[in-house]
Image 1 (cartoon, rainbow, N blue to C red):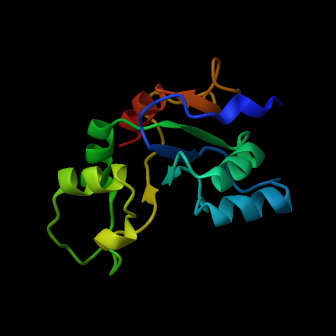
Image 2: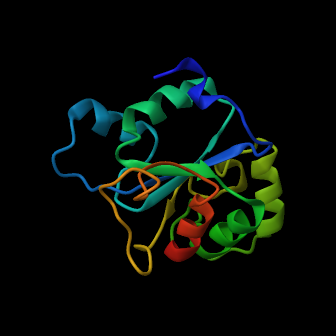
Image 3: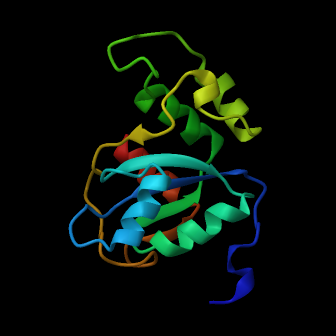
Length: 155
């Protein structure tokens, strides 16, 4: 694999990672990497900083089990509004402004600083996916901007 594969190409800061494959027959080191990325269940989703060089090695290791790409601000606001959870638990309802949180995330803050869990639980995508194929044919790997369409189908 060439060195410049994961260079910064856009102006967005956030990547969204979605675990597509389940837990069966996954090598131990890949499972450990998924745990460190907080992708512990199928269809869980996390946001990571695109400019963090340490993340790219982990993404390279698990790219056959996840879908990832740049998230747009509008989709990020929908994701926060519909699928975010409080650190106190699901039953505790509190009011928050998803636009303020989305702009904070784009500027480098974390979900924990807003008292939200650092991951999202998504539904399986409507109309299904081709889960065993890489991006142009399926959803695994780098989906670039098409990840936003996938997230909308999973909300």
